[in-house]
Image (tube, rainbow, N blue to C red; front, side, top):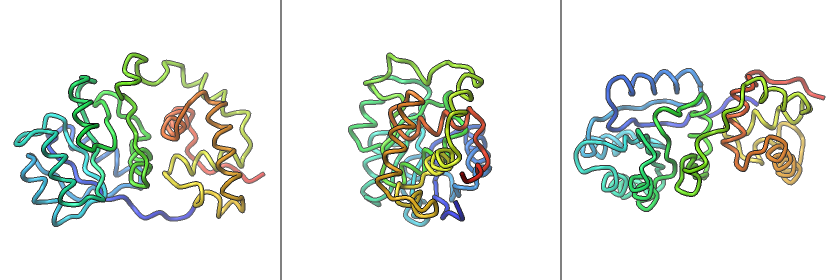
Length: 223
């Protein structure tokens, strides 16, 4: 799919171990550049003015002004910047506060998967991802199927389908996927809809989750 411009991310309010884990997880993806870290909401505001990151990954328990006020203040600094909340649990009150104040994503710390970098790219390109949103909190997290069961679903996909799936995982738009494959945007959109039906998912980040669990890590051959 070629080279991609990295998404710049600032980490705000995380403890040392979480910060290191996020650094490693995002660095290994090759898709994300961590521009800096801050401990409090006030520090985050000061640093993002200088760094101008694309996304801030904000600890729901950030010290200082608290999560909701920090989200609002960050979006005043840069209305185009995206804020993603990382929380310890799916507290309805915290989730609703994050959504109301403009967060573009809400992730549970224990549910960070290999597709986090792809999810951030999707958010950067205009998506809004709430895997643990109030509407779905009672349905649990992602399906507890075995990786082998998920891999079996991918065996029926053509090489072209797998290339489209990789494009989705890398956070590309339909237009960006279509170009190198010499397909129309409408064709890519239709194929993605069919892929979602086949995998039993409803959005692009869930495609990325299942792709990671199925081990779709290298470019498939063209058919």
